[in-house]
Length: 162
Length: 280
Image (tube, rainbow over all chains, first blue to last red; front, side, top):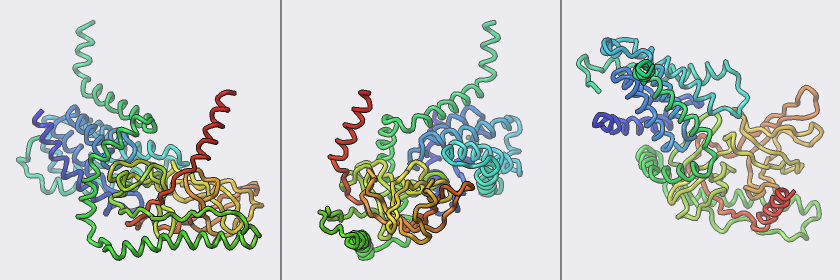
């Protein structure tokens, strides 16, 4: 329980950064998802249960703070946790954070979660599937995964276990 | 058998929990328009709005001073007045000057600053730092000194959520100020569009689009934008008109809430019609 509380406290600065990036680093509706990077990190280091529960809570908080549709971020972050949880391996945890694999997992999780997020948000718009995958799935996913590169650079080998 | 089921749930508990959370999220999304969820969102949003407000003031290095704010407020009022004058002129030309006009310029606009913008392709929502304590009510129009921005969707004591023109959930009755052709303006994710206007109707590029008398949400004659494109369908019978807004939504920082209150007479008439429909 203490661990969950610690991660919720750690979430506050990430949330603040996300709000600032929404304002300053979003171009043509495409912006990075810093909370998703944190969710993938937690899932890969602590497993799917902790990752998905925290993703659900983080999404709930972000939906409230952003004033958007309640449930969209809850769904997309939980989905991202689920996708990254498929790569979870207790014995190879440290490998993820010291190689490109982490960026790749962020990319895959962000791609699928952005696609479904856009699909749910754009249900009233006449968009085709290619546009949803490339414009609203792949491009934000590449943006998000590019911002996850510092994690593999700056994560020490004896990194903080969470 | 019992052991098998127990083992199955134990081995698959991660997936079961995640799937339950995903299903709960989907249920929450589907319930977004319910009044209980809306009320919950308003209450919780009010509780965290201070965070966004303080972030906004901390990050806003180019914050306008009070003088500029006042000038913008005067500009917004003048814009509404000029637009009304255009209408008066047209009505004079049509010999309708003997009608009793209701004064529609508000005594005072409520100034507000945008503290946060939630921009996704289908929905642009702004959060402004004026709320019920400042006299803001749900449904009031929000504008800049150049034109309409959107309407107040929900408000707490000190903050309000604005549903902008670029929101698929907002449909606004508009009219062409020159030809008086009416239509419904809606955001399609890329453009603001007035759909299905008969091709024979007089809609020219460059015409001014303003809010319509038929709108039950927004007072008439607030400038919305200019016609920039007209697309006729293959049959040639109807056209879609693309409108570019006067208000620059992506750069807007200071806005004004128009303290417009819907006519109680219209409300009661609509209410009576609804009761009659239900009786049938």
